[in-house]
Length: 402
Image 1 (tube, one colour):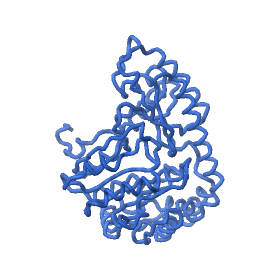
Image 2 (cartoon, one colour):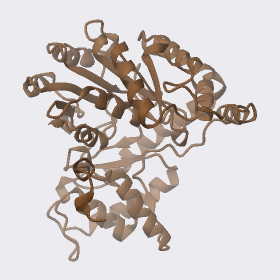
Image 3 (cartoon, one colour):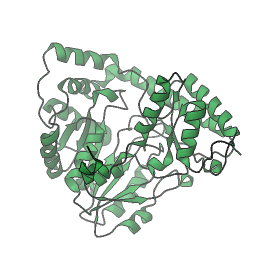
Image 4 (spheres, helix red, strand yellow):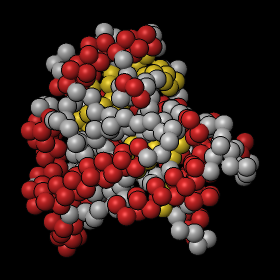
């Protein structure tokens, strides 16, 4: 079939750079190469035992039929209780929508709010899918740059300057993928005060990395009374409980938006997996059974972050901040742009990532995919020995560039 027969919608979308690098690395592995992946955003830990047992019990009890579109009531009640207890957010169970991953929750909200030509403010660096989801809704992504020197935190005044009559939505993550940046309560309030100035502007607060926080208490934008009725809070079990393959995300939203998301989801996926929901219920309602495993995972991520930062210090020309959460480091590697090893010339982050993948078989993701071409994303969601081997190769390859 000719490409001309495809919709303009799908032709406007870019392939996820993280998935593209993963695919290229897989191809090299299949060709017999010893590829080390520091590109994928997935915990390398297994789902805690008690959560797996809950899924097995669900199968044995024949909880294998269609679930309600918004998710089982008992799971939505557990999510509402979690929001109240851990985040001081008040969402009724009817304001909670369970979806096939936080990614679907975000897409649902964008599709429910954005009309053709509406503008969506997105601080950079951003998760790769935000602008593509906006384009899918025929909206216009408006990127707000930040800098490594400010820990990749966008300035509220810069947000105000980007706001227009067409601005409809602000989308951000904290902890942030790809930078690991975490906004404090004071920083969130300052942002919220600016966003609240426009009465028809909504916020999607992506908090999927909430559990992987090496600093203080996690803070949510919806905690502020003056803006809470315009915030959609998105979370899930993928990162915090090593449940990526279970595909359970959720959103707490103002009632009219929750109702709209329910209607939309009912037309293209209906309710998420019944078995996965029973597993998520145990994770959220009876998480104490998984406490040790989750705590060990977070401790390992913290140690790996410190290791990556130490290894980066040894590489000339690389600049980085200290990320406070998630499992990524987002260093500035632009000092290598314009250099060559005689065969490969590095013009940008994509060139650098392809050079490292093709010559020393280390898979990373270029910062261009996240709206910041001076940087690359390094995921440390892999064991320490692999990180150390990867950095030996990276240092060797970069030393050949002049």
